Image (cartoon, rainbow over all chains, first blue to last red; front, side):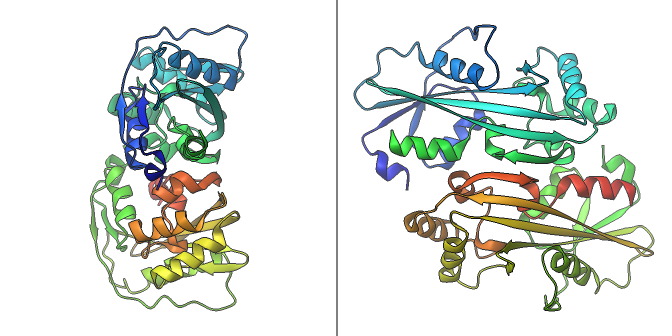
Length: 192
Length: 192
């Protein structure tokens, strides 16, 4: 479907996230993975999706030698809670504190994707609101011990146990919470 | 977590749905599967969640010999669109027509779960609203041919390709759309 319209394109994913890699596989896209180290810093005055837009572009910036048919994909996701950013936790203890803060409240998840070719680039974003039930400390500790969510913004994977038992509802795209607003990606990639 | 509170309970799932079986596995529950044939008919005047409540109870009704520690689980899911029920499609052609009707519009998904023991039962429900983008006939035909959604109410699985590219947003629980409102199940099972 999507891949027949992208013949001759050379798709490069610059993300180590196994979830993003799986989304591209599920879309039956041929792609290669190229990772470049980058320090994820951004201006302190940025808020919400301005942060993920900035970081998606920043992750694309080291790719300065794209060839004619290359399409580079970068992405960034954050949890936005009480006007503050929650990124990946630094430790299990940090993860427990983050989840205690999210318990019983709603928060937003912002993801941005950057598509970049030799001649142009585009950045687009998506926002999902997630409503957590009151999580007990027993539930939080069990989840963090069992699932070690150290690679996940906000310290949880909505597709994991905590998402099963802890998320009452969402408003927006589920896959955006997993780090990849796939419906927008599909649309933008076909138009790119 | 959940299973330590259910020691000595004998959990029986009466559902052939591989997705529901997987949810119980992911919750690390020990359970057996027992299927009993039942004709899924319901009073014509029922609407929305009254239908899934009725059918979840109906599916539990043949289990008349539950033992002391048995907990039986049955469930039903429908798509509710323009005041009409969409169940499983009868053919690929029927699936294509259903998806053409859902294209570009919102619909509701109702799931009900019945928990039943020797002495009591409880039925609870969940509702999720799903917003589809405009689907092209090419996209619909591709999906139906590739994924054969004949076992799925409304002719789609939100966790499959069509859910990836076609669903703009939802309001409610994602897992409810997959046929099992797992957050409510977890809560009710621990209280049962």
